[in-house]
Amino acid sequence: MPGALAAAGAVIAWRRGRRTLVATCLGAMLVFPAFHLWTANAVSGQKHVVPGFLFAYLPAGMALDRWWRSRSRAAMIVAVALLVT
Image (cartoon, rainbow, N blue to C red; front, side, top):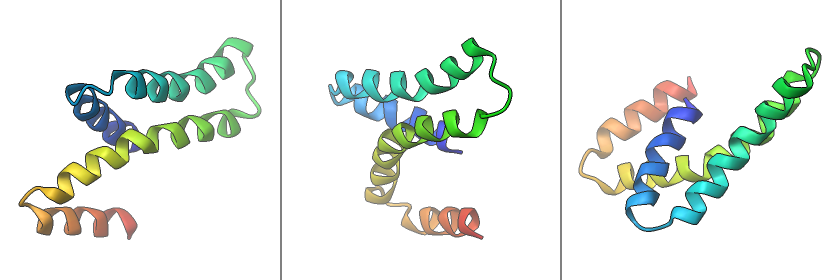
């Protein structure tokens, strides 16, 4: 789910002209898992994926903000409630 929201937020930010922010966040999101795969470390996968998700939450927040400002707030509330439970 964070990856899908990050992709949607990246598209929104890219269209608004914030290309540096998109490149930085998505690059940082992919660096940590790429390092994990490159070193072939089978033990600590979670600790390398979590920092990537931290950078994914920035564009994901942009997607959620855009969705919240739209007219479909009821759908947003239902979707967030389903994710929380």
